[in-house]
Length: 606
Image (tube, rainbow, N blue to C red):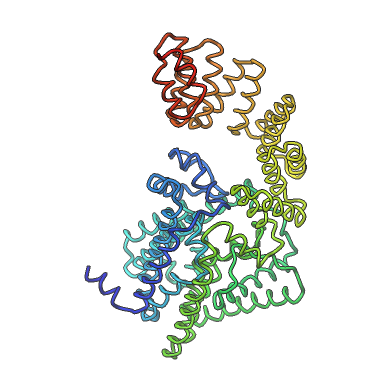
């Protein structure tokens, strides 16, 4: 307790940091989720919603293997359900925890310990951190960083006393970090860069470095394969080697600018056009950095080495050496790298202590002003996308995302404008055609919807688009084409729960009841939490006079959704056939405003 009080009273920066963090936490508790991938990862994720914990360990999500993060999402879902504010508060708490871990880490370095309050403050408040600290889908970075920083604390302890316990704990914590997100893949490189070569002659250090390197290789391969499978790694940005180096050097300069002047931040930046001056500047940046690293290693300037390493090395996997996503740089990639810039500033200015405090006061002031400027734009998805479009007006990714959000809100005209612009800006963007087709399907305009689904399928034949086009054919009453599309969707992906249900509906329409039951069985096996699947299968059983099976399915539907009057109505119908008392069920159906139950209640329940 005394130690905790001492930490709080040691530096005014800590008080300031905690006050500002509390204000921000209060604000973000009222923010909504980000429709980009928050619903897919959490709120609409069947594994999270229904607690299928084994799936967390055998499945990937958004191109990532992150079972521990998924367990955290499940715990939060049990606590908060669909209240986004609870998840935001968890993210912000993890972020503040990471700031305190950083405070404790730099307490162990004599040359930095007097500035650890400043480091903690800038790390916690800098607006570059908001993308990770507010975006629910990026909680994986926060949790992985918590384990990674805890591991670094143990590695520092191990460096000082060679404790076997510290060695074992550090390896375990790094493993946990990888199971949240493979953010620690560059840790072995950083240790090799910063520590003296003589250190690695010790057997225990060899065990540590070997373990970390093995983790890095294994999880790098896993992540790469998953990213390829989920189409995050693609050929859209494959370039000649010298242009890739130039672009990556340019990205480093961009990050430096955003750190010192964080007033034009965005969730997505346009991929910069390749120019000769840009390439020359980027290549010169790399040559300067590499020369500086060699010079500092020779001169044993370990703190500056560490600063440059902490800044550059975590960025290496996302500098487009491997074509990744649609952006050259993103704020969320700077979560750890922010520290590196702070360490460099301290090392360069520490001989002039008053100037150091002035510089960091200015960085703290600019960070606070930048945070106050940027924070309101995260309040809703619509506000965030509209703000980001100011910096990249032609971004088909943002336009498509904003169109999806407008569709959810019932703003059909605005959504159509967004999808049309997205299609015009990138005619090969199959998602814009698909989402526009869903919009027209929602508007009951199946003919135009089919046209958009056709364009999407021409660009990329995938199961969801076939399922959606089949639904459009159902609207038009074209059963053969609908059945063909559902079968094609299942041929591409037999786990398409919705396609099985719609195909079963078609079978039931043509009175192919045994076939329909088999198809409903497959849908229920894939997703046993959909009330409609049980209800529709119960209707099929009823038509086959398998009344007890029908009754069981109707009861299962009610267990999953007790607010649907049709389910109680059909239980009543089934009970009449079984000569049971149906009155309580008809009464419940009436209470749920299912009008058809009124007549039968009057007839059988006088």
